[in-house]
Image (cartoon, rainbow, N blue to C red; front, side, top):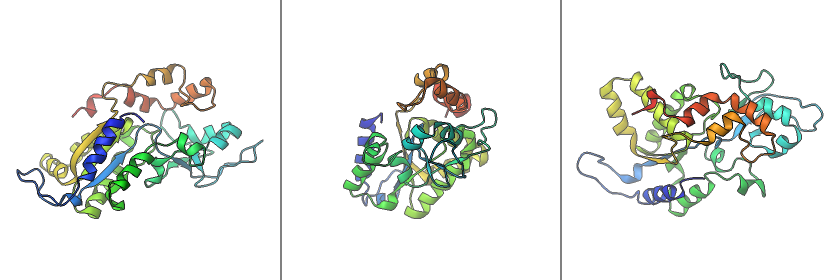
Length: 270
């Protein structure tokens, strides 16, 4: 995962959340009430099946709650079925009629994509970071994950983020420190722009003061990401045993996400 230095700094910041008071109007309250909200990057959230799909010529079928992203066993043995659960319609981003997948929830959805003795360490995303937080003495309810369906455009993910921030405020009684990685930065920035249009300007500023204490942009593609060009033209396999021609077809179904990674849209600029 990129941005290890930024993550270490973020851990140090979380480790300083003790009972202190700040004057000057920025934050007046107990630092122990702060929480950390993690917004993962592209392809960094587990996706699980939300339907039943029988896979011909394979002993492995997809049942509700089965891991889709990432289950390397089913990817290797039933790649066609796996693709049905992964690919969205390129025009309206709807699910395949035969299979649908949804993001998992909680911190476990962003720690390892394919848990296992061998595959776990190879697919680790936020696991080490969360272990560091535990070593620093961070309470369990002080860290919230925001798993999302990274196949969708940010415009389809708006209201979910609002609920997460409200939950954090209710649990801890204070604002949150936001840690966004890669595509998660553009999702977060889009959310702020959407919120600005949904509520009155004076209420928007007050909402930011009440809910967000700091924002760490880790590996943010603010000027774009070059890998999206390769993904669009020839396919990007993430190191998986999938032909690039198949990956290219899949990436074509993720054009809205590729656009989000390749440049910063005018609407997202703060």
